[in-house]
Image 1 (cartoon, rainbow, N blue to C red):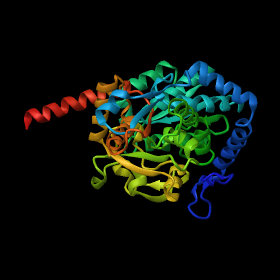
Image 2 (cartoon, one colour):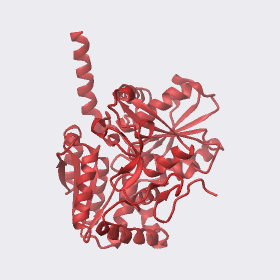
Image 3 (tube, rainbow, N blue to C red):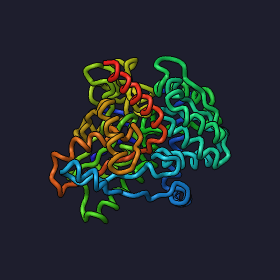
Image 4 (cartoon, helix red, strand yellow):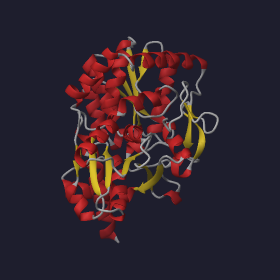
Length: 404
């Protein structure tokens, strides 16, 4: 029996923890019920699965490698570090797995337009990509701050034909992008498909995203068995909303010998309050139509990585924490930046700043483990989008040292 206890209404741990669910107005609930009915039907439809598998293979380029980071492992000592190379997917991140699955659903639901939210821009690019592929009009909401620090991804979305709308309220980051996307959906749900990018939101979104992203963990499990003849000792991934993490974690959740660790962004430090680590510091509450761990002070939500800059987290991660199946820790901005530079120099792989949080955790943990033990890290995306941001940060740091 699976440790994951979820109701047909998307409530994880009913009666005990009740994370997830759907806390939305009645009109929007009807739209979500229609979406859920379509998802429940098509996820078991052989023709849908064949088409999804076709695009995973022929368009995204799956399966992607489970790569042994030999030099990094050797320099750290301790456990073997394997990287699940989601950065090698078309568009450069794990997000495309989910957008292909959802756009195939949108097509079957005869959606007239698609909307989405994005933080780092990777989900926005992936959404714009599949909408271009299937000739569906597309609108992307992105926090104004994120449009500035991820200007290249904004241009990529526009090149692909998407309209990008900057969210200018509040912190002008991912939370506000989700706010505006949900308002659009509430007003236009009759002909609009909301292609939500992470394992968050009201039911059925968390289960939909998990379903389409679980290809990550299924592949990683099979590849680890092929390479090592056994399952890993530890799997880890960065957690913002938590889609790449739940995609890796879920296929291993019923394997008790596999330790699961999610890595949240500690930002300027947990003690500073300027971070995005609700699982480490928050309390259960309702945000964006679902219940999860939420930061007490969402206004101070911050991460060096735009894709992790969210004050809530997926309900399934909240449930894993509550039942003790997964551990959640945090990595601050400086540690993530160091991991970004270290992986680039040791393996010739420039990781996304989001992924760098999980890499930093593996760098801390591997030396404490035996050499015959195995860590799998979700390398959720490539760092091309972050190079200009890192360049500016390193120049500023150099200036501070010169002026000290």
